Every structure is written in structure tokens, then in C-alpha cells.
Length: 287
Image 1 (cartoon, rainbow, N blue to C red):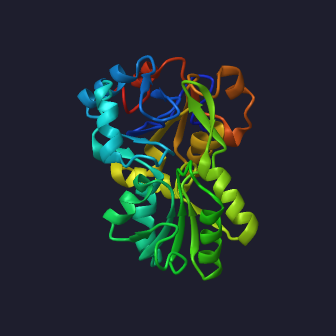
Image 2: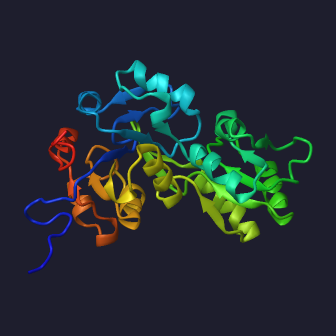
């Protein structure tokens, strides 16, 4: 007798003990400046229900413009019950990862908010033009709409001097209220890598570094994490690679037809017609 799959025709799934939510395209659609949010249907109700049931969840965004202590209050202001500690960014992952790699000083290509979690972790952050900007242990590329050739040159020189390259997001675009928007760190890192041929350490989704940090924050194994998102190349690749359970929403860059076309390594274990369907997932409905 064949064992049941995680998501067969009968809809069976392995029990989920905690949830990782993508932000843009899953819970909200933000404007390009991240100054306003359109909350997606069912998001507020679902998160409040999860809190009532005692189901742990975190929100992991690939955006780095704001640190969690700034962005989480903005999300609470539109009704989403997300505490500061439950909002993670690629910079949160970098701050967790870098000290173990011996990084004490990092050149940040990004807005001040990009480097804030690193500084909180005790890593000295410098920016292009600062003294010794090319003498660092790591280069970290995040949200940097004003990036210029001087920034790229400083990053290249630092890498030639021995710095490792860390990148917040390798996603070319993401969903906003105005449609697809370009991911700046994707473009910047492409330029730096073209010049230096340096390998990169990815800290945002679909990195398993990010999924490991999420599982640690939730206090559960990666295999018991439910990953909820709109991007097959981001959340679903991460779920599949990490042995987690993937849930695809149709409110961001992927609709039901897009999900159905995905190969096995990028396909969700279940497509959600609404966020509220998560309340019927084994492990959550039993709370």
C-alpha cells in the first residue's frame, strides 16, 4: 500500500504547527514607497483567529527598507496583529547569520533601515564614502533605490579585498498595489557579481537560512512550518527545499492557472481560494 502524499487528491496534508506568511501579495499590497497598505481580504480575520487559537506565526518579507520596529507598527495601524518580533526581514536573517561567519564589519548598500538589524546585533555598519568602507568582512546589498556607480565600485573593491557578499533578495520583481515592481537588490547584486564573479550568500526567501530562522522563532521543525505565499520562485521553492508545507495564494503575482503550470519543485501543496482555508489545515483546526 502506497503511503499518502503530503497533498493528495483527498486533500490530506501533514499537520502544520506554525505558519510563515509572505507580506506583499499575501497579506497586503503596498504602494511603491511603502507608505501605505491595502490589506487583502481575510488577512486581519485570519491572523486574529490564529492568535486566539494559539497558533504561532511570523511574517517574512523580502523587503529591507524598514526595520521590523518601524514596519510592524505600520501594519498594526491597518489592523494586522503583527508584533515587532513576529516580522522578519532578510536583514534579520543576516544579523543572525553573520556573527557565526566571523563578520564584525559590513559595508551596507541600502537605506539606513537596511543595516539597522546588523547594528543591533553588534556588527559595525559602514556606507559608501565612509572611512574604510572597502576594508570590511562583508558586503550586504538590500533596498537601495539611489544606488549609483560609486556604490557598486565600493562593493567590488571590498570583495576584491576579501569581503563576502550577502544579498537580501534575489527576486527580480514583487507584487504591489500598482502591479509588478522591480527588486533593487536583484539588479544591484547582478552588477556587483558580474564585475567580481563573487558567490553570494542569500539571506531572504527562498534561502534556507531564512527558513531555519523562522523555524527557530516558531520553536518547531522546518517540516512542521506552513509557508504561505504568492510566488512559486520564492515561497514555494523555499518550502519544497526545506521540507515544509507550501500554500499558494492567488492575490499576488500568481493566479490558480499560474500555480497549476508550475513544476513539482515550485508547486504548492495546496492552493488557497481564501486565506481562511488555512483554519482547516491539520494541526491548526485541532487547536
